[in-house]
Length: 378
Image 1 (cartoon, rainbow, N blue to C red):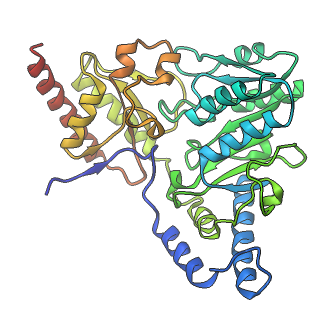
Image 2: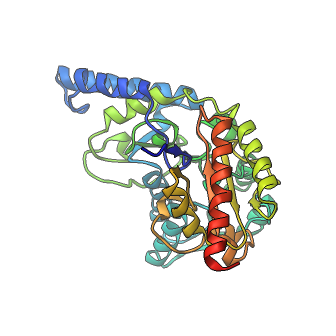
Image 3: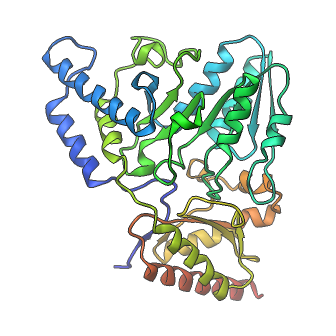
C-alpha cells in the first residue's frame, strides 16, 4: 500500500487522543440536557461550565463572554449579522483577504439591509494589511472593522493589536477571525481588547462541529438563533456539551515552536530544487506551519491531483472553497496574477512533522513538474 502524508493542517487537524478521551467521558457521565434541572442535567451543566471556564482562563477573558457555536463559520456570521441587525444603517470596513464566511456574510447582509454599506481594503504585496489604509476607509457611520488574525492561505500574521487600538480610539467595534491563529500564536485576548474573536476547535485537534465566539461583555450583539435562550440569549439551542469539553481538552496540547524551522527548511530546499518557485507572504511574519507557493508553468489543480496520487494531502487554498475552480481571492487581492493564483499550492505542517517528509515532498514535486512539462511538450 502506498504511504500517505498529511500536509493540510490548516484545513483540519487530526483529533487528539486527549480529546477522544474527553468525548468518551462526557458521553458516559454527562449525557443529560444541561438545561434540565435533574441530576443528569446538572452533570452536563457542570461539564459545560468547566469547559467554558477552562477556555476563558486560556484566553484571559471572563467566562460570561464566551458563546459556544458550531464552528468558525457560524461565529463569523453571528458577528456580522448580529451587528448589522442591531442598527438600521451603518458601514463596515473589512480586509479583502478575510475568510469567505466573513466576506460573503458582509456582502449578503448588506444586500438585505438596504441601509448598510461596506468597504473592502486590499493588502500590500506581501499579504499584510496596512493599518493606515484600513482606518482611512472608515467613515462617520462605520460600526465595525474586520481583520483576521492570521490568514488561512498564506499564514501572514496581521496587525490586529494596532487595528484594535485604532478602533477603540474611534469608538468602532473590532472583530478578528482567529481560527488560524489558535495554537500557533500567543493569544491573550485581555491584551488585544477586541470586541469579537472567533475560534474553531478542530484546527487544534479538537472535535469538528464546535466553535467559539468571544464577545466582550457589554457589547450589544443581536441573537443569532432564537428559541430556548441558551448562551445568555445570544445563541439558542441545546448546548453541545461533548464538543465544548473536547475543545477545552485540546487547549495547549500542540507545540508549533519547532514546526517553523521545518517549514523554513522545506522552502529553502524547494527553492534549490526548483529555482523558479514563488513563495507568497514569505517577506512578512507568518504562522510557523504554513507555506503557500506556485511553480510557474504548472496549473494548480492538476498539480494538486498529481500530488494526491503520490500520497500527499496538500491544498490549493481555503478548505471551505474546495471544489471551486476560482483562483485564490487572497492572492488576487495581493496583486498576484490570475494564472499564478490558479497555480498556487498550500502546504501546512503539523506538530510531529519530520525533515524526511520534506525531502519526500520536494522529490515528489520535482517529479510531478518534470512529468507535467513533458506531457505539455515544454
